[in-house]
Image 1 (cartoon, rainbow, N blue to C red):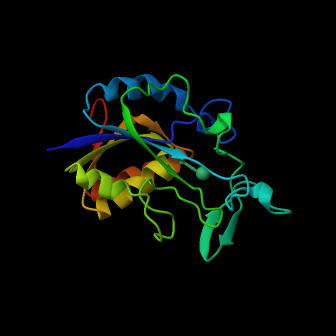
Image 2 (image 1 turned 60 degrees about the vertical axis):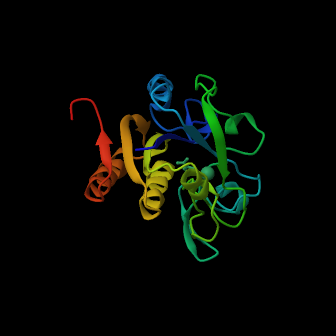
Length: 201
Ligand code: VGL
Ligand code: ZN
């Protein structure tokens, strides 16, 4: 079956020293680099926000990161400023090998809506084109890794399932913002038919 590796958001702001650091994130990078050798098609996503993005707490007076607001009808977690277009925080981590990455899908450019998934914005209003790209290449099975397990990786997998792809997740090649949230997510994804690939399982 034709397969592809999807590397989600391995960017400076989500790794050590970044503004929205995911605990332990840089430890996954050697494995992600190794996994790339096993795939003929490697695709990456990049969170790519304008400075005035509606998910940034700094764009509201009196709001703090991790508070929840209503953003044009959708529940929105407010984040620290992160992955601002053309800034260092939005660049891929320097240890991530990029020579095998064929295409990069960017998301989160519209200031009015957030976009966790690599396929759609959070309101499912607009596609990134990733589905059509993969289907054009006759890809049926997607293997996921990257950051953050409980946000962008999770929502990308949910959309991929809905688009009809078989999905696997490299559990040791992802890290979560909240470990407790990721524990629930793993159960949910397993029940949905996602193959959780982990050593000792
Ligand atoms: C992400 C929060 C905000 C992610 C992106 O890549 O998981 N999380 N923007
Ligand atoms: Zn973001």
